[in-house]
Image 1 (tube, each protein chain N blue to C red):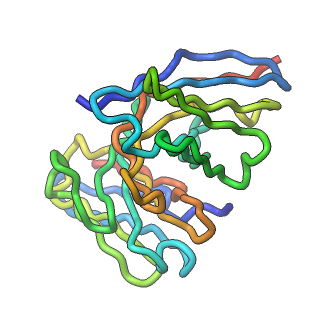
Image 2 (image 1 turned 90 degrees about the horizontal axis):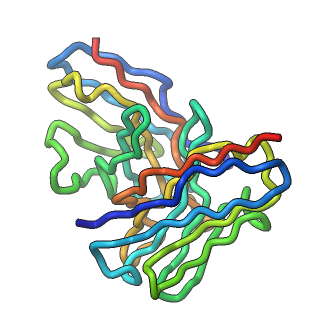
Image 3 (image 1 turned 60 degrees about the vertical axis):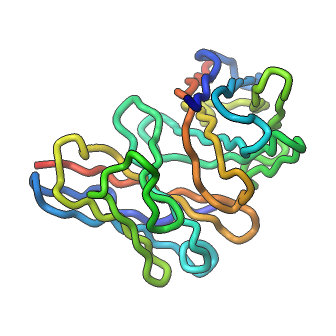
Length: 110
Length: 122
């Protein structure tokens, strides 16, 4: 099972916006509106940030937004803050009753 | 509050089996799927499979089929994951996570347990 493709790292200055991509195929990201995003700080469990491509759970800052175009989903962080420095993972349903994660993206706040 | 509390760290020898438990509280245990995800040191997240606590039905990632067994005990609202024939490649933090209430295709995991480190070493 190959993982979804994410950039290894993305960086930005405080206040800027950054976008993390998550590329799959028509059998996963492109075929279903079942994409979620997770934030993970070092040594901590992941935290749900976006579900169903673009929905935010209660309590998650509206600086986080999600979208999808074709086989690529994206997570945008606006007004970047120091606390946003973490690893981010996308996850999608894949036909055949599987779930698959992206390889992860390290976000650095300069 | 909704909470998943996992069992403690384990050290196992190659070829052995390990069992990790996940105690749920703060919600109706049988209403939500439980997923298992692992993370090798310095690596990304890897989905292992799910269990339906209501029916006991399971679905395992192809990579782990034949080697993983997921079970639940509704009387103590606990899900468990057993992985057999361990190798050093199985050294990882293992997480349980509450899944969607009815749509198992939806990769909605919230919350997660705190993680259990399993170390496989001779």
